[in-house]
Image (tube, rainbow over all chains, first blue to last red; front, top):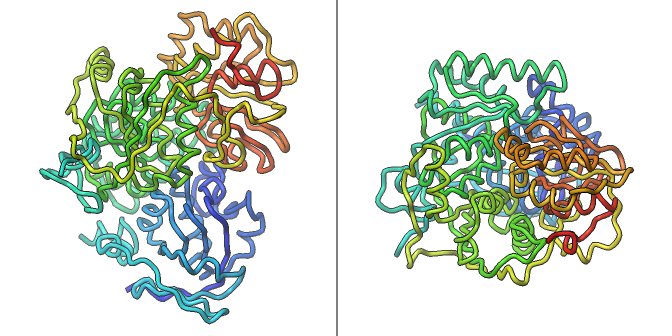
Length: 163
Length: 418
């Protein structure tokens, strides 16, 4: 079972590419712990120092476009982000997030209701999103069963090791 | 109901007669490749999380150091060393500093009909030879490296029918920028972009790769061109044979079909900070530049270098502009040397760099500073992609970059080419 996520929203726009999530010059640092302090540096240099474990990223269309760098979902997870909800995701970011056990949720409608730091509650299993601050409820797209299995296992490696 | 080229390759790779969009398959891969952008993490996952001991087939796993080469720091050198040791231990093909990974793959490994997975988004380039290439992250890659298999969802296909002929000064690069501008940065999200029509039948492999390489900039899973005599000649001249020469069926289903006429195409340019913000160069107004870059997996091959050399021959670049040129591979570099192109570049004041991702990767060479403007043949113009977050990147053809380096401002190359 994937836990219900509750956290504050960090809202971004359309076409947030993976260079914005973690710029190239930090990708060859030895590990994700060293990289995570630079998360979203081009868009908000204070992000990494102010985000709290459990917080939720809210994106517009095409979230995570561009480079295939898995470091992008990895730094989000390392900072304690509990999940990402967006109107749509770029393909590789979506796969990478699932593969490392970071829940990604597609929902067209919730975006406009969200202001920075609103509290959201996401239930991936049920496919529901609640904006607690605004007291509004939304439905998210259900993930295919195979994808859900990987996410429930905690990511692809755990999924493969369990097989 | 027929199938597209992409569907046929995925059906073959998953041992099925027929696959349909939306279906999830487990496919066997023909090759997998990883570069120094992420391989240090792949190795950690392989050894410490999967506890794997062997790669699935040492002849089908390729490591290429091309992103930060030569290394710019001790930490990067350590990453390269880690790759080198792993490659030696597992006896897999290893390249370091001899080209951009996708160009090396196309020159040395790719044949029509393959399914190729690589830990880099521009893996879609291999469609230029009629192979299905798609990019993945570390975890997917590491799993493939271990098992030789991957789960994939069969994508929908979009068809792009290209007719007519390029006018002088207009190139495949302008065409793909135009297409991405039209359909948007997620206009092909999760789909296959299949390029065909009478014009593409006459395209060289270089031009076909230019189209397929940037399919990912429209969100596509892969780009594909039907393999033909030109593709067969390319691989056979390098001692390889096609695996399968798939063609799309007459009654294959496309989600959408788009038509382009090259006779109407003019030089195009993507303006900061999105690849789909594309306008004709004639509409750009006066934009001063600080640096030009010719290279990358999209546009650093011999034909692009020839186009640039034609404009730069016998001239000097603007004294306040830097022009950096990185041939896409050792083979391209040697060809450019043999044709005298490197002499032209050095004489005109350009800096000729070793084959690598270079300025397009924005972390190793030719990084730009605050407030600077770059015009590039690279793949992306994202905010900060080439250096400082407050800098600007324009994407254009090698000819447009060369013409702009001479004047110091963004310049239409027509009139400067024969």
